[in-house]
Length: 198
Image (cartoon, rainbow, N blue to C red; front, side):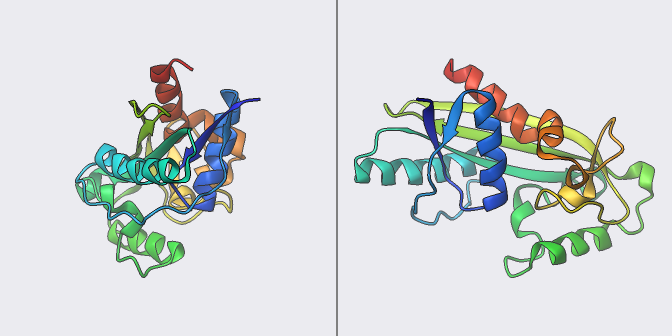
């Protein structure tokens, strides 16, 4: 039976992506468990991931479950916007916005930026806490650029806008296995699994 990792996220797109990525390492994604909502105010990606992982770890301890938990915090950083939306990527434009509205706002913010100057990258920080309370980190980045209009139906978040370097398709135009080859989350998970010696 494969080892089970519990993810501190209710984002179904993110959960599906991590389930597939974990399977590549012979690991399984645990069921979605409720945990106290965390205000992501740490000021950096790793700090926010640590807040979420600690909240879920505490809940598993309370429930008597001994397992590894992990959390990610990811963001899209656009050079022409001085790194925005960055750590606030999931809340860019306000928490009340839908993802299509958030993407439209981002496109409007860079509407005057010529295509060659739309360089950007996705960053992912992962923090895991194992059953003994030991902490491990993993990091990943994917460089690319922002396209002029949304392309593709797959993925989630900013995937329809992000064109990885060396690719002709956005993340949202790729299949899940294709995206995994270039994904910041896949790279961060490989880094984390190596740090944990799994």
